Length: 336
Image (cartoon, rainbow, N blue to C red; front, side):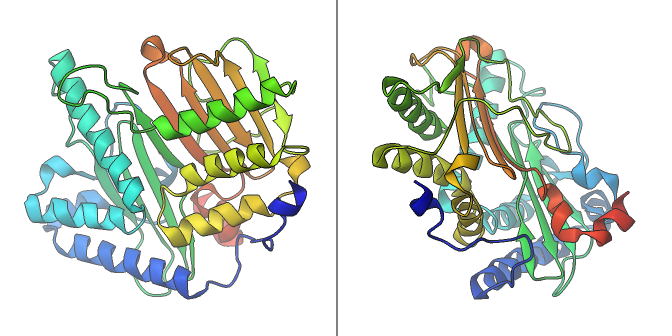
């Protein structure tokens, strides 16, 4: 496992941006400019914030009032530009997940007969700073069960955490979306790894009770959680593949250039510093929680609510959420 994880060189927060990173940043910047250029002064006033505004880190995934400009206030062309901007950050499979999450919100409105509370057009775009070449600025797309946060530094470095995706129902049992299980692959990979480790006699199950939600919640700073489960040292080849596939399933929500950087950052970590733990039942349909944690990265998933049919998942970076570490003194001076 150690050989596999160290096969790629270590990637720090401020490595020189290669051509692929530059392409990603250029695409995101151009799409943000096009979106802002389509807005009336009133809508632009809702969408734009100073980069140093504390709102930039005020991320949420629960149903509540938000700032920014929502899809429902945009015409068809503007909505298309908002989604095109999101698609410059997410991969094709990430966009499928995001669009399905919004459709599930509409389904909830139908199931609960409450389309106002479950408003599938209440997904907001916010821009922090001025998108431009060699600029430092931020972007957020957010609504119930979906939060994508991007920080671009000096037009050279892109950070895309925290990224949250959730689904309710986690698996649709009836109706027009019957069978939809948009975050099912994450669950299946993690369960397969946990079962394999348990059968090998490893203490991967650290509790028979799953917590009610991801432990970092909506905190602006992802705290270091206590070490649980087992380290990746001594994993069999099959267990290595399952772990890497699980990490990739989360990272590949982002476009390839961003995902590759995230995956490399974990592959550069020694096996003894990568932990995987599971809480709750391993039985399909029962409440569970799992996490992958390294000194810098935290991946969490919880499916306990609504009879274990309501999933929350997140990718956090302890140091570089919202680009904190990469921004360095610039962040400290301008944001605190």
